[in-house]
Image (tube, rainbow, N blue to C red; front, side, top):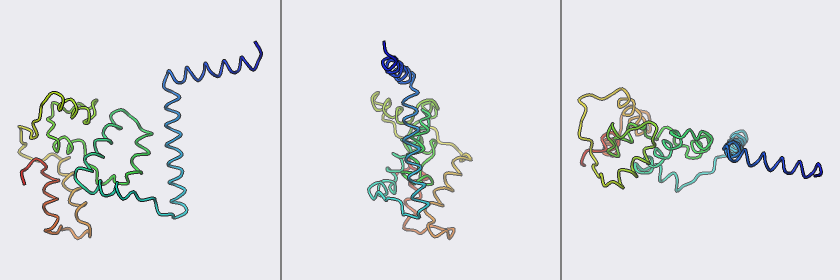
Length: 186
């Protein structure tokens, strides 16, 4: 065997081992994330306005759109897909408008027993749908709001207080209440 053939065989063996162990895919994901973030940083340095995805903005400005983005974010976080998350977060450019895991659970009617921190909420929804459990409202209503619920309420208030006046208009009051109390009938 020649030295060139040995090098080729060694290279192929190394690539196969890196693919089998998942290292190569992780490196590729890290490089894609780094390229995306570098391009975004370059645009920011050159004071270019970021590309605006109007369809995405319309979607994220709706309650259901924020819920979908929150489910995707939860999926990426549960499985520690940090490089995908590093690309997803700036790409949606809506970190302040996304719902917490607790709020998403309440919105979707997932009970505390279904909240498994090692399982993405999207998977819980699929399981619930396949097993025919269509219960939409949790059976137990707490007497007081938790600290996290209070923080979510503050976040929603600030989201709808566009002019930062400390108040919201009567036009958006319905939206505020539906975001704060998603399981209440309108």
